[in-house]
Amino acid sequence: MSQRITIDPVTRIEGHLRIDCEIEQGKVVKAWSSGTMWRGMEEIVKGNDPRDAWMIVQRICGVCTTIHALASVRAVENALGMEVPVNAQYIRNIIAAAHSIHDHIVHFYQLSALDWVDVTSALKADPQKAAQMLNGLSEWPLNSAAEFLAVQNKIKALVESGQLGIFANGYWGHPAMTLPPEVNLIAVAHYLQALECQRDANRIVAVLGGKTPHIQNLAVGGVANPINLDSPGVLNLERLMYLKSFIDKLGDFIEQVYLVDTAIIAAHYPQWLTMGKGADCYLCVPELPIDRKSEQYLLPGGYMENGQFRPITTQHDKYLQQGIEESGKHAWYQDDKPLAPWEGLTRPNYTGWQEDGKYSWVKAPTFYGKTVEMGPLAWLLCSLQAGHQPTQQVFGQFASMMKTLTGEAVRTEQLESTLGRVVGRTVHACVLHQTLSQQWQALVTNIGTGDHETFIPPNIPATGEIRGVGFIEAPRGALSHWVVIKDGKIANYQAVVPSTWNAGPRNFNDEPGPYERALVGTPVSDPAKPLEVVRTIHSFDPCMSCAVH
Ligand code: NFC
Image 1 (cartoon, rainbow, N blue to C red):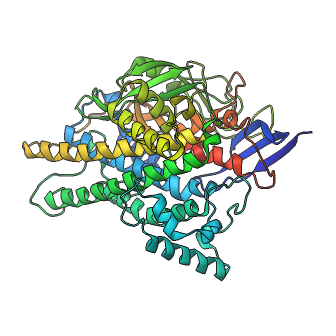
Image 2 (tube, rainbow, N blue to C red; image 1 turned 120 degrees about the horizontal axis):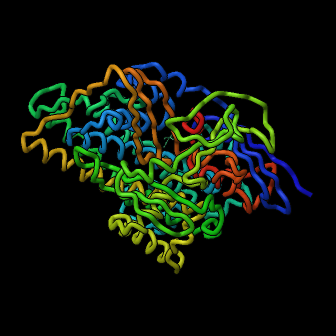
Image 3 (cartoon, rainbow, N blue to C red; image 1 turned 30 degrees about the horizontal axis):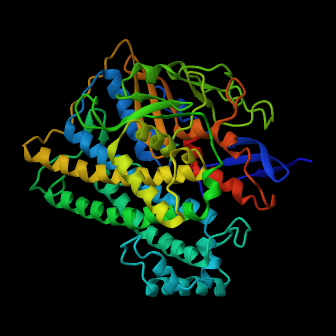
């Protein structure tokens, strides 16, 4: 006998997501992923000046605002065939890397940790034993018995007050929560410390971007950060050193806390490295351009289909641009047939939730007809295949920590799983942090040569039609913005977003999207408390305002 469950809304995500599952003999056999709110940002931006598009479309999201802004200016610059000053590339790269690091830390601790960590069990922990567990794994100064005792007292006071605050409504005591009390205590302590640390990542974005969310310093053609080392109010030496202090602080937390916690969680939940595969194909785009023409990148891109890897070395690769389409067959739009984004249409057609028909506001993107998973897992698999050394080194560090904890190093095949996504995100954060320091140094060195250029004025043709695409490797995966400019105004605009790829409904050939496929086979020990379903969904780090836009 099968049973249906609906989780609506899924919480600790951005936006509005409904998940339906059919369960048989304690396992999910079929799943549906639905985005339940539409705004029509692609329609709103039409008719505007292309130089203003980034300001409007960064409102697609309240989380990865910065990333949409960057994708948009890249799309218009691509249409205009423009170059970008290297100082602007470096400043944009620092913003993008700090933004993603912020996102990953918040996802691991604030958005998904409580799927694995039982806060109330931390009350039974021995703080001394908790501190000892981290000996030899981490040099973080706050991993002391005294600190863990203080955190335990804090939780006790919360529980006794009957007001759990940020820890209310967890699946506490759930049979799938199997961490020892000491690990739960460590994780809660780091959850609270991560609240402090994530601010430092965001400060980097805010100092350069003027504010965050919704940065103010971009421009088609560069950035609006005038450089003068001795002058107040612009990017000067004091501001650059201020940024450096946050970059250094962040590195300590990422390496000594985040990476170690990921290994500890993975070591205690090995079965979650065997389930939750979302697709046979993975895509990521090369990122962090370091030259004026955006042809050289710090991080590699690539496409994997059934284990076969094809490198993608530039965002201008025609193979990358020509394979992307979106279908609305199972989404609430008029146009079912897959369309290339420059021809894309967004014409709403709400029908209600139909199991075999239309059931989501999210379109279904495909790459040469295939459903593809995007995000840090795709990035990790492709970067390892591309032989990217910093990634290999961080992954090796993670694997050896797993060996210390479990006696076995993690194998790359285990990454195609729910916990593999979590691991991918952590490795991504570590590698991004290395690029952050590198990009800061590159900026300072370049300014030192006397190059202060940050902006090249764009020249939008008053007549005729031009097209451009801007890619970016966002925290949740490869994002692209596609613009058609006619007589100086935006005639069409489409965003093909990482969470659209992952949260999409069945595609034109009725094949499930990555969330839907990843859920099949997931055990559900208590259908009234579907913690295991939420674990897999959260492992993608859903952003539904992005996915639907
Ligand atoms: Ni919103 Fe974004 C979504 C990201 O998938 N990363 O590209 C945009 O959100 O966080």
